[in-house]
Image 1: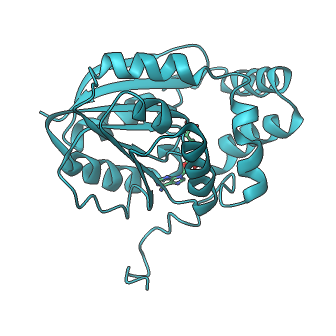
Image 2 (image 1 turned 180 degrees about the vertical axis):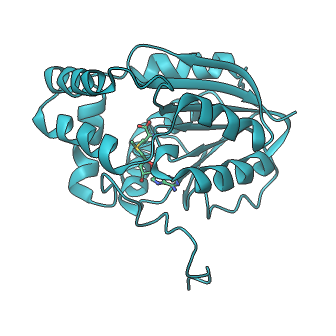
Image 3 (image 1 turned 135 degrees about the vertical axis):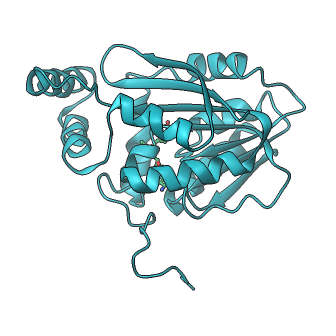
Length: 235
Ligand SMILES: C[S@@+](CC[C@H](N)C(=O)[O-])C[C@H]1O[C@@H](n2cnc3c(N)ncnc32)[C@H](O)[C@@H]1O
């Protein structure tokens, strides 16, 4: 039973792309693998967070489990958390096929997941935090800080927008076109949905949110396009 007050953000019915739709989940990996190299990215995350066989990791907004399953091959235990039951079911099947038995699949999100076990050594989150408006991002990030051991690491990847708005229309058009060329028109439509309906914030807001949540930002990297990577430590 939902005991949240009426004003509480409903993260299960978030705006934007509907990841509770099994049809959406079925095409997710296929689309994303066209322009993301999960294996390479996860290998870099494992190295940068210095993760090893003794470590437990939470992947929040785990989706189809791309990060969670790669990390599970190197670490002791992974908690794959997502608000979408369809995503979790898909990720669980992938883990079974891969013979991985050290992943817990947990229904919940930034605002609702309760980590009742020992605090984790690391948290990773890729392309999920933008589903929350900024106020709720801050609430969620503060909750994550509390789930980490002191000295624990946080890897965050998300789409964030530059503070300099000059020429933003052309940059958004170019992003949409790039995705259309690399994938298809359906995925390009998701880019438009992302910009219009989801809550990617400014780079300077994201950095402030992380610091105010109690993280020390060890690296903030803004590459081509709108992808941003943050490596943080809970002091
Ligand atoms: C774009 S997918 C990213 C999945 C995966 N991390 C990846 O990089 O491929 C966004 C995921 O965030 C999940 N999500 C949306 N709102 C969330 C929330 N408040 N807490 C946790 N996960 C959320 C969605 O269900 C979806 O699986």
